[in-house]
Amino acid sequence: MENDLTKLCMEETEENLLKTYSRAPIVLEKGEGCYLYDTEGKKYLDFEAGIAVCSLGYGNPEFTSAIKAQTDQLLHTSNLFYNTTCGEAAAALKEACGMDRVFFTNSGTESVEGAMKAARDYAYKKGSGRTGFVAMEGSFHGRTMGALSVTSHEAYRTPFEPLIPGVKFAKFNDIDSVKALLDETVCAVILEPIQGEGGINVADKSFLQEVRKLCDELGILLIFDEIQCGMGRTGAMFAWQYYGVKPDIMAMAKAIGNGVPVGAFAMTEEVAEGSLSLGDHGTTFGGNPLSCAAVKATLSIFKEKDLPAHVREVGSYLTGQLEPLVKEYDCILCRKGVGFIQGLKLNGPVQGVIDAARDEGLLMISAQSDTLRIVPPLIIEKEQVDEFITKLKRALDAVAIRG
Ligand SMILES: *Cc1c(COP(=O)(O)O)cnc(C)c1O
Image 1: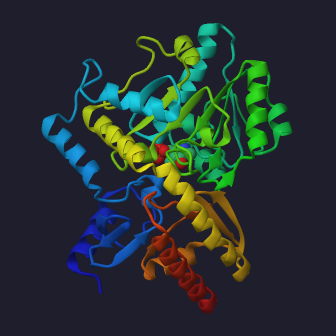
Image 2 (image 1 turned 120 degrees about the vertical axis):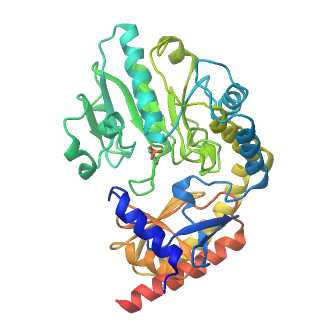
Image 3 (image 1 turned 90 degrees about the vertical axis):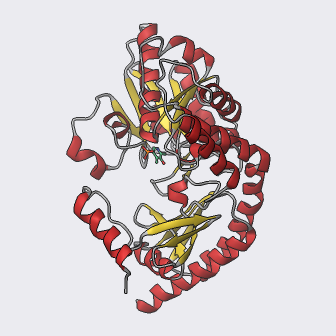
């Protein structure tokens, strides 16, 4: 039976928050490394990392002491003053993402909004009259009106229409379908190099190369949404580096603050020179001392530990452990993804497996209803991969037995 705290937390949440989420029936209370504990004291191996956010795991002492120190010193100042962390965080992020100029936001969806505004403004300042966007089927870019306009999922869009006009959707990994939509009305193409919510769909290198080439030929900007696939998950710091195809603008968030809410969009000097100048965009919280201390600490730990190299090593071990499962279980149709952004596509809904995994002490999430999403903290070792495989097999068996 649930204890009083568990019951109270669930009741208060259900009674007071909007009912936009269906939550798993546990209350998470504490984290340590790549493990989470609920209010009943049950321990879970975390293979969802707060949706690809907590890449350093929980309670990293260097990270914790950096944000504690900043909390003691100064939490917030507006962007109407300089502060002590913002410039350094931007320099570190620039170095990591290979772009020239950065704007800090508070979330992924805001980073996409900013990227879209930069692309619109770039076209506006050039006087090109271009305002349209080409996005991909299966995309997810966020829930605000602009980001939702380039998100393809019908159920997310329909109640909020009309969305911004001039958005068309091409087929992911189908260059002809992109080509057919690119004309003089389009200011930018936006895509996730690896689609997260859409089911862990990996772009072909040749597809990205050809999209890049078409954009260059037609004077169209290329925006990468690296909110989920960036920050080391592919084994490169950002997915564009994994592919060797560089965007003009990129959106980041999720893991860049390791759990402190912060995002960013960044661009080349060329785009920065031609868009979003004085007074064109703003934010009250974005780039504040606390969030920038989190970005600074996260990037410094990534570098110190060389987490992308760790992902390449343990990620290929994970791939090696997942492949036999695909053969062993008829219900698994295929494995998708690279490094620590992988998916197992099943022949039906995965929710039963996720529930059974939770009983086994393993936290997982889905991508679409038919894909188990594997986005653990980047610090996991082979030992945790083995533990994951054991628990996942037990969950799969339990569901199969239950029919
Ligand atoms: C999570 C996500 C977003 C939205 O980020 P929020 O912080 O939830 O607003 C946008 N794009 C991608 C690819 C994401 O995974």
